[in-house]
Length: 321
Image (cartoon, rainbow, N blue to C red; front, side, top):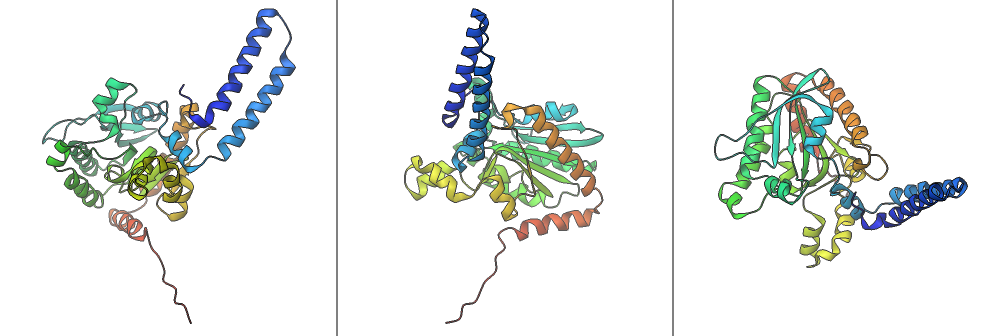
C-alpha cells in the first residue's frame, strides 16, 4: 500500500512491531508486553495524526492510489450492473462509466468518473478526466433514467474535465454547460457523491443533484490547489496554502451548504476499509432515494433549482458612522 509523507512515522512503527513479532516467534521469546506497548503507541499516533490533518493532507488522501474508485463502489454497492456505452455522436469515453444496476431493492442508473490503477489503465481512462463524449454519454443515460423513472446515482472523482485540444474542438465547455441545464430538468431523483477528487467543471458537469454527498476525506473545488497556487503565487509549491484558503474539505462544504451530508471514512481513509465506506454510502443513498420519491416531479425540480440558487447566498449589513 502506498505511504503518504505524513504517514511515514506510522509505517515505521508498524515495521518495528512486525520485526519484533517475527523476532520473538523465530527465537521463541515472549515479547508480548513490549509488542502491546508499541501497538498502543501506534493507535495513539494514528489517532493524533488523522485527527489533525491539514487541508492539503486531506487532498493527498483523496488522491491516494489505493482509494476505491467508481467501479469498486459499483461492485460493492450494487447487483446486476449493466454498463452502457457511447454518446451516439463520437465515441465511448472510458473515463465516464454509466449503466443500470440495483441497490438493495432499488433499480437505479449509476454513473461516475473512473480512474486507472496502473499506467496503461490510467491512459485508457484518461486519469479520470472525461472528454465531451463522456458528459454527453452521462446526460444521454440520465434522460433514459428520466424516461423509465429510475433514480440516478452519480459518483464524482476527477481532477477536472480533460482540457486537451481535441476535447475543446469537440465542445467540452458546451457539453458541460448543456449537462448543467439538462440535469436541472431531469424529473427523477438525482444523488451525487464526491468520492475522491471533485475538480472544477469536470465534477460539476455531473453534479447538479437533489442531494450532494461527500466522503469525509474527499475534496470539492472550483480549481485544484496546485492550479490556484500557480495563479495566485506563480508557484505550485504553494498548494498547501491554497488548499487551506480554498476551504475545499467536507466540513467546510457542509457548513457552506455546498454538500448536504458527509459520509464518514475509517481512520486513515476509505482505502483502509472500502467495504465499510461502501455500506455507509449505500445506506445513505437508499434512504435518500426513498425520501425523494415522496416528492412530486414538480417539487423535485423546484427543490433542485432552489438548492443551487441558494448556494453563495449572502446578506449585506449597513454600518453607521
